Length: 441
Image (cartoon, rainbow, N blue to C red; front, side, top):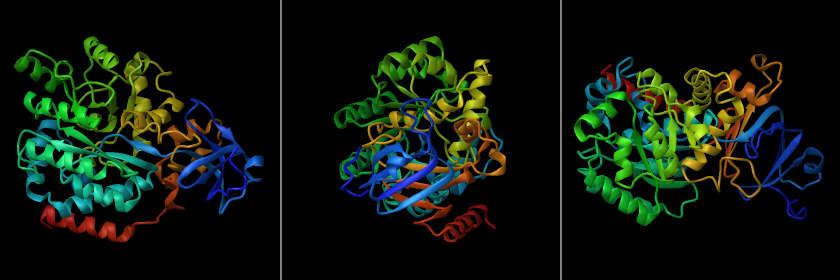
């Protein structure tokens, strides 16, 4: 019990409280108390009402859960949403996205695109996201101002990119940003070598050494398509994951994004190295990249998180929708209706995401002492009735427009669907203006 003499800042009284840890638990008629941005109390409503609190909020018909964690994306690409649809990955990248980025991406683009992405994610119940895009310093400033939590992965490629003339400059910028923000309460800097086919061994070794020195994570697209794996086998005589293993990159701080191609040998490498996999089902479906065998990974003990990817290939940053797709797809891929049930799907979108990003001690579940990163989902609507299992209704019958309130570190960023730190009309106007410039209309 918290010290009753010290008042809570806020007491929330939802109909259902889903802590995620312990697994599979739904607490009915419980309260959650916040003090100094952290969870200070979880207990029965009758006990909660005895506590002093600066503010008490009733959340009838609502499910309170940890905020969702979007473990992979490219935030500023919201400004390319729908620009080049219905194309295979390499055509999409080489003929459309990379030329558009070369032409349009500058600090202003990243600032406006990241703001749009953050606002969309907050409205969708996301309290923390991973971003891997150009001008990471600008992105981290937007995260700082917005109040959301984020992992910023420094993009590193063997060729020039917007904001960095070569890999060495990108790495140098990353080290500097890491050192500037290492005590930031909500921002974590990691290294983001783009993919095995865009970063050679020499730069990967440099990244490994620096990441080890700083105890920083590495976030990378790996085995996104069968073509990528086949090309690596033809050119190098080994699969990309095996190459990363040989170079010493795999491990608990390595985040392998996509992983649609997994052989028995790949699975052994993932398990033995304790590498996390970040599953982006909708982007993989849309680009016909393949299927990540989520249930197989889960049963083998691999930590699987979920991400939306960028809005240029998805086309939304809707992690609740992504998690529903992940749950449905996992069943089809495994050929089993019991694969990735609703409770495990929610865990994948919360605690598994926190674990992948190295944040599980801070966020990802509702436990006393953790940061108060919370989302309240309204299950009182027509489409959610009747409620037998609120977590099932959340995953299978609820859209992101049911997100009512959201807090990060105890600060409310969404209040009854209204963004507290953004002007929504202004965001829309700015995005429209970019769209007109980019399309030439």
